[in-house]
Length: 201
Image 1 (cartoon, rainbow, N blue to C red):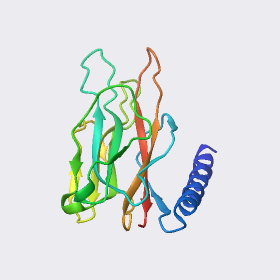
Image 2 (image 1 turned 120 degrees about the horizontal axis):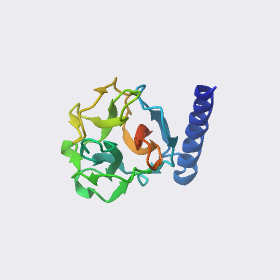
Image 3 (image 1 turned 60 degrees about the vertical axis):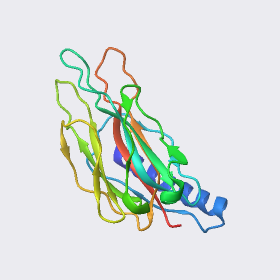
Image 4 (image 1 turned 135 degrees about the vertical axis):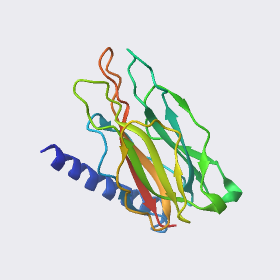
């Protein structure tokens, strides 16, 4: 039942994204697809999508990472992802999109695709649920650039990298995060999953 509800939500999101892309850019710069991975964490809810401006694509990214907290601290690992949108080398970092992020950690310096390239696919490093234990969900992310170069973020090392997402034909132009809100004295995980949007021009 929960998977059916998520599938319906994704279909509605894609339809909304395509509609918004066509109406705001006359059909010339619409969102063409949503790419996902299969190993996201089970906790939290999908937050709002955040999109690059028309004609911009994500050419770099930075991560919000909470360092290991030791015992008896509560680890959350990766809390957020920012996409740095550009029109190639000439207009880098003109716009940063984030969706929603967890409250813990600090932002890293951006990593960039070389030569005006764009991010086209991603893979998440996720720690599988442990019971009992200190769950962290997403720990790190890798992005593939349009020239094939792979960039790995400065996240933590718990868990394993899963399969790569599908690939955007032109480039990534937005994201949506699945975030578990703070739980007080109970175990926090923050970022659990990510979706990325593809645009065609």
